[in-house]
Image (cartoon, rainbow, N blue to C red; front, side, top):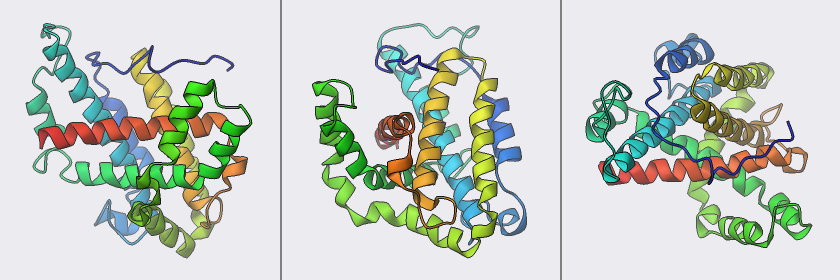
Length: 258
């Protein structure tokens, strides 16, 4: 499609949509549960556990955005009526969705793991993105200025952000012949977003999923050694950078509510 949307003009929002059925399908059918993952879904010595962890982190980010949107509506004095909004207490929802005694005790840990994968992806694509800025391929001057401020942030020079991608890459190199499964499951993750019945949720879900997919491409590529940022489509890179912003906002929410 040649349609482009400004996410600032079409922001995330708490719409009251219940995506639980979609997430159940993602975790049960797209996630890996065989072999070592049957005993340790997120931390087994296998790239498939890393994939599960990254997808769980994506879910955690979405949960954080739901809670953030809920809190923003309350702060604006909007009434969350029971008919339109099943969940109306952000603190209860944080405890249920992201708390250590909630539905996924590892939720916040997995959120940070996926954020590190995204940051590593941006770091790997830094030269490509700066080159695009220099060649006038990144919007206007203001857009380039904002992107440059992200790409020159000291956090991208911190070696600790590579922990997640190094772990994933090391696991992938041990089992590179099965990495086609990762590509297939990532495509399935993109496709399932079409089943989301809320337009805003589907739109932002696709951006976030594409951003994660791009980070995985850059981390492992086809053989486990990493992808080439020069060959990544500019829309994928845009989704990657946008996803970093979404995860950063989600982490801020967790820090406020923990």
